[in-house]
Structures are given as C-alpha cells and as structure tokens.
Length: 434
Image 1 (cartoon, one colour):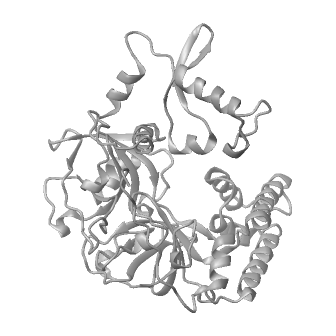
Image 2 (cartoon, one colour; image 1 turned 60 degrees about the vertical axis):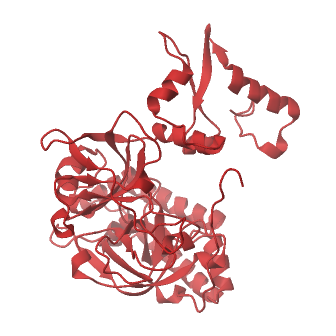
Image 3 (tube, rainbow, N blue to C red; image 1 turned 45 degrees about the vertical axis):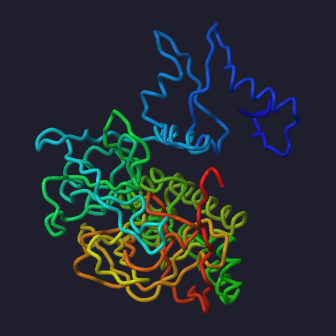
C-alpha cells in the first residue's frame, strides 16, 4: 500500500477518505483480472514495508480455512497478538527436517523442557531459548542451509520455526547435560500456538556481526560520562581504515570481512578477489567495488553516525544451560577474522564489557557486565551466553529483550566503558484487558 508515486503513506498524513479507501481494500478485497483477492495476513517485516498477503481462495478454500490450517490461534486475546502469531507462519525460512518420536525418522523433539524462572513471576531467564544436540546441528541441519559458512564449527545456534514454536536453539552436548533420547528440546516460552505441521525451519544462523555505534548509543553514552573525544577518535580511526582499504590490498583482505558491507554476498566476492591476488591499484573493477563499500559506510556514518568499533561484535543471545555463570556474568567466544593455517580460530573475551540491545531508548539499556572464561562453555561459539541466576533477567533490562533471536551489541573497547550506570527501566507488559 502506497501513494500514487510509490512513496509510503504515514498515519498522520492520511485524510479520512484515504483511510476509508484502505479499509475497504482490506475488508472487501482487491479485484484484479476478474478475480477478487482477500486479506490473509502480514509478517513483521511486511508491516514495516506497508505490505500484506492477499489471496484468491479457490477450489473450496477460504481465507478462514487457510488460517485454520496454519494453527490454533484461539489463545490470542488481542487483534495485534493474533496478527503477530499468524504472521509467524510467513517468515522466510529453510526447511531442514521434520519432527518424530523415532530414532531414524526425523528429529526427536521434547517440547516440555521447563523454563528457568526468575524472582519476577512474569519473567523467565530462558525466554525463547531451547537446545539442539550439537552433532545434529553440525551434521543434519547446517549442511541443508545454503548460506551456511564454509566452517560449520563457527555456528553454535540457529533461529528457528517449528510449527507454532519459535526462538533460538543453541547446540549443546546432551550427554553432558544428562539429556537422553532427544535431538531438540523446546520450552513452553517458545511455543506460541498449536499447529498440525511440525517441520524444523531455519530463519537465520548465529554469526559474528560487526559492531557499529549509532546516534542513540552516542547520546546515552555521553550522558553516562563517556567523553565526546572518544567518539571523535573512533570516527577518525574508521575514516583512516576506509581510506587505507583502497590502496593496501593486504589490509583490505583483513578489513573487508571485519567491517562488513552492503550484504554478505558482496563481502564474500570481495574477499575472494583479494585472496586471488588482485590489487585495487591494478584492477579497476576491484577498486570500484571497494570504493562502493567505502561510500556505503560513509553514508551510514553521515546519516546515522554508524561508527565502527573494532573491539566489539553483534551476537545472538542464549542461556547458560550448565548454571555455572553467576549473576551479571556472560560467556563470549568469537571467531577471529583471520584464519590460522586455513582453519577457524576463536577468541574468548574476558573482563568487563558493555552490552546493549539496539535500539536503546533509556540510559539503563546500556549494561556493564563481566565476561568470564569457563572451559565447560567453550563448545559454544559466536553466541553470548547469559547467566540463569539473578532477580531479573539481564536481557530484560536491555530494552525489554529476550532470547528468541535478539542480537546483542557487545563492546570490550575500554574507551567505551561506562563511568556510571543507572537502574534499568521496567518493561513489564500489560494484559489486553489492562
């Protein structure tokens, strides 16, 4: 849905006539080519793009029968919750397996693993986080994902859909945890509605992402005592690295995967060209690609103050199933951008770190935590593991997030450590009646 010239429509700019026209299209349908297309649903990404699914129900089908086939949404008490649950079925995924109770027929799924409670009745530490057998993840799931990295050991968690369940599955050694006869364990917090189909589908993989500051983090960081000179220094470092990338091929080969680009495919292509021995000073096409990547980051720097932080990463969140992490402790093991002897290398981060979940809207959304190294957790890579101890889940303190696929920005650059912190904001949700 948009304006005649293709621009988006915004609520504050709509007249009553336009609102009524949109309402008629949604309720009565759109007639094209002699057929009438009725509103079915929309996903969360479509809501941002002001688009939706319209279908022409034929051969005995109806919109209601299609929704009934998706699952049982009777527990949804509000229209917004109902629309969100229906939209869960329209996520872009890769099908990898079906669930089963037998050893050699699909994945064996346990769907009643208890959640890890907190002192606050409405919150659980494990909200949205389940488990998958590590060897099953590496040998049965990742080989079926076309965009999986070359080194499968880099992946320790996936964001998934399985019928009416959603969230994150972290790879663990089930024998160590004492779990037998199952390949996947789901928690009640992950099951949003009941559905007849039970295919495991991968939404995304947990990889290390480049960390960039933005205007909100800079504003709140300044409020909490970080000097403005620090941000200017980081900006100068980024500018210098972007300029050097155009003339130094060896530096570009290390920096391009480190800072990222427009998308992963472009970064992979650039890395392949640089690895083959091409140099930007001699190859015009490579130079133009690097120049476009530089322009992309300069535009983000100018419009959104996206300042790259070398000592930082964006990681998917998970829960420490062993219970070894104490309150306000986390475990981080990230992959290095430079391989050692053409093999993946990893680095465990220790010491104080700043953690946030973007977007940040309150000074309390920026938290200072302690990263520790525990040998029992070194099997988990490129995932930030949070403690299951504490009065309130640390994830909930950061913009009210949880562990159903949220990604957390982590920084271990001492210049960005907060001189002071404030109490986290309350993000308690209210019932539909309230």
